[in-house]
Length: 182
Image 1 (tube, rainbow, N blue to C red):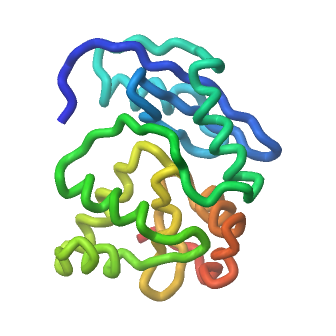
Image 2: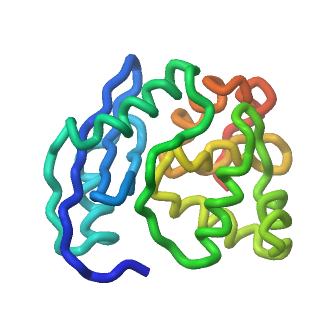
C-alpha cells in the first residue's frame, strides 16, 4: 500500500458534451477518475482515504495530457491510453486491473472470465470487489466487465455511466440486458 508521504494531488473537472467528471493526478501520473456528474466531495473523500494529509490543488494545465486523452476516447478517436498512472493496490487488485486493461476496446468479459484469466477461478466475488476499487475509471476499463448473463452489473460510476461507455465503444448493443446490481 501507499506510504503516508504527504504530496500534492492536482485536479480538474472535465466537462465534455454530456460528460462531467473529476480527474486527479500526482506528479507520477493519473490517480483518480471520478463518477459521472458527482460532486467534488467524491474526489475529496477518495483523496483523504487514499492520500491522507495530501493537498488538493486545482490545476487544469497539469491535467491537460489526461483530459486530452480522455476527450479523444469520448470522441471515439482513442482506444488505448498512453498516459502514466499512479495507482496502488494489493497484488490481487493489481492483477485484476491489469486483466481489465487487456480487454480489447468494444469487447466485454464476465467476472468469472477475469477470475480465470488471473488464475483464481474461485475468486469471482473478490474480482468484483477489486474491480469496484479501481480508482481510474474509463482508463482502466472496468466498464467492460458484465454479468455472466450479459446484464450490466454494479459500477462505481453508476450504471448510466457504464452503459454510456459501452455504447460509446459499440459494446452496448450486446450488453443491454437487464440492468441490475451484482
